[in-house]
Image (cartoon, rainbow, N blue to C red; front, top):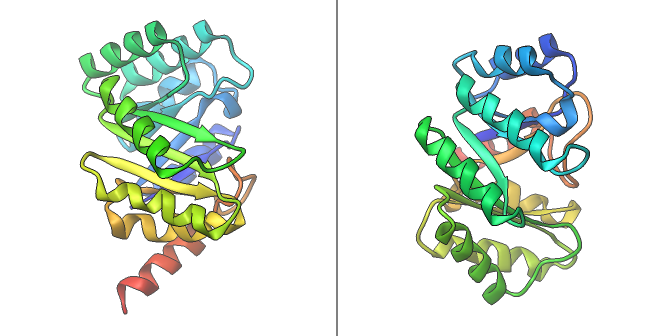
Length: 212
């Protein structure tokens, strides 16, 4: 399954993308949607992830936006691994009360730590109460890909892949190793992370492998 990460600021275009995909991530920190637009998006009865990275909003504003999305029907909420414990716990409790799955995500935009550290981070995600752990790191050398993909041998619901050009292969093979889903960029517009493959292209890659 492929999740399209959406940063489209036009709500009608955003809806059009959502309608064409199985699951979409709405980057609330990049879309600038207000309460009415959040309600309209997350009430559409599609599988949606509510994400608000700490790029420009205060913790209180992030909390407010994510709670609004959850109340309106988000299927998943993505919470930063590095977020304060009180913030995480409040959102986790709120999400579970509203039957919304929790993704706790770790991002490293500089490098890929060793396997032992990645495994500890993954365990930490589950210990904090997530339903799905997400581990995403920058791939600098090909060996980093094997470190990331080795995480799929561990129990638990997981999304793990690498960023950057060298990490693209992990986005393609992750679903075959047990990932809940993998992430793609919109077919048009800006990607939300380095190395994201366009949705249609990624769908073609995965389909071609399935036919082998």
